[in-house]
Length: 610
Ligand code: G6P
Image (cartoon, rainbow, N blue to C red):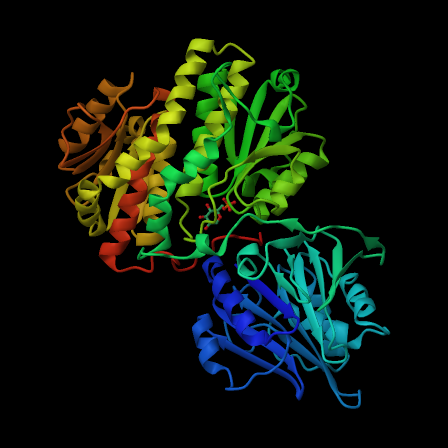
């Protein structure tokens, strides 16, 4: 979704802003723009489409050592140059005239009323955006300093925002504010960076300051000053981010999605390091901030996430019930907050999110906290909003994930749930023998995933077959069902083919009517206690002419057009390995169809608005 960058220092701002916007492209956007303040005044350039189109539209010389930039994902008003940011407001009464430029992420709920009030005052608005109203409010504020003008303006806003404000009347600074949308400052040597996401500053500095909701900052070439809405100083030191610029490079790969699928053996190895306690056959999860007594106290687990993270929550709930025998379920965070959920003191709430910025999940976290519940996070991005709001958590350590369709972060979420289930199980009735069995199986996962991704021929063949089906089913039972749901999600996200997941057992209760040679089925069939029943259901499909691509274990005989096998893990962990071929299936199908794999249409990597 929308991205913000800003620069102030001794270098030319334009290339830094363009590079930062390019790094943020993966989040999804439809237009982009920058405003740079130079010796001869300010210049703003905006364009619809990609950052490279913006770059092409730039004048030859766009000098200036301070500037702000934005990638926009349309919310208020269609994608157009007029609606792209920076939005601007002129103070024509000043001599010489001055201009306020604003870039904004988030949604202002009272934008309509603010715009109407401005228009009633004679302001001519040139865009359909909520952001333009912010620029005018700042320009018209009765204030001596830019900081006062920003504070007076945000006092009138309801909704969410991350703002960066450049004012030609105050060329030595950028003022920023945050409420509900992420914003960080990058601290350099006599230069400062502003970004909505660390990936935009990682090339320049590893020192960052995360703004919290309600915080503002004055950013100058010499440093930053943080303050609250009531102008109180906030003392905060920079922290070091571990992400490196290399991790954001494509390297020899054609797409980030494939790179991220292939990275999983190494990234998982890293995640598991130091977290497996072989002596006591459990998981070491100090970041949870829950001692054994506290872990025992919970009588239920409720997992909250969106999209793929929700499906991984379903997989996690099954793991927790299997290993810890604690009732567990997952719910889309996007629904949870709006149904006045009952928060129980003896329930452990778990928020799961790759980005740590998904607005629906962040709001669900706040809802749990507001009602006094205990909530921990399974989050990938260190220092992200959700990671900072939860009571404790397990960082996923998957490294940056750039492709919109999540793969390695999903696998890390599933493994994170396995660790949590193990820890919950071992303070209850999971025996040391079973604990040891799970620890051993977890240690094997990176190598086994390496085997699966190295042996892709069958998957490519299957993907090419599926790519041309107008519609398909993904089926699985019990432990295999979340894998089927995630497989269908991945397939539809990037191939734009209709893919629907069903419990294999439910086929005969309706969907079987659709089975025909034109509608193939991807079946997740672990070699477990349900194998015979699964085989029976697959016969029902083939008897009706339906083609089957089976993802199963070696030695399982199935009546399928193509069979893809994965190594056996502990039965509880099998769904994790069975998921890997579904990632490759989606990738190769989208490749065969020539789709834009890393940036699928209509989707954003990180959905920071509701
Ligand atoms: C968006 C993305 C999905 C992702 C979901 C949750 O909808 O398009 O791919 O699964 O957000 O993202 P999170 O960062 O919270 O895991």
